[in-house]
Image (cartoon, rainbow, N blue to C red; front, side, top):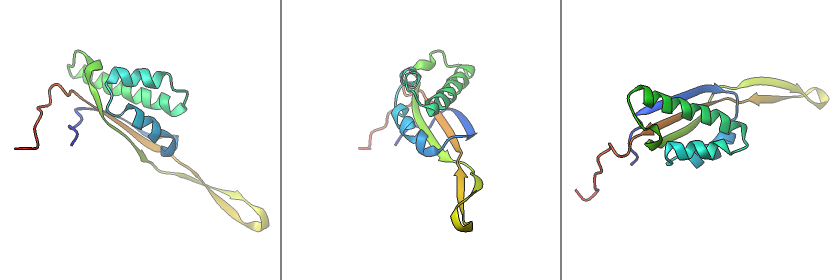
Length: 124
């Protein structure tokens, strides 16, 4: 069971498919915030830039709420969910039409201070 995220940032209606974001989100989940920023900085993907901005926002939210060293926070929740789609029609042969779905995503990053979370054992 993962601890609840104390500091959250969201980017809703991001103009990128969730399929392109999820492998990058899997890379940063469970890492320290500083390590996650270093990882994202050197990835060539457009989605990495979006996730990097959301992570910076979550770190700024933590700093605003009084955390001194935001690099020691852990990315406990890195989630990408599907958003609404723009639907367009593309004309095809013999009078048919194909649907073009321009997908969007909701990106959510949650940080938590694992040092402040009490550790419970399952043997109780």
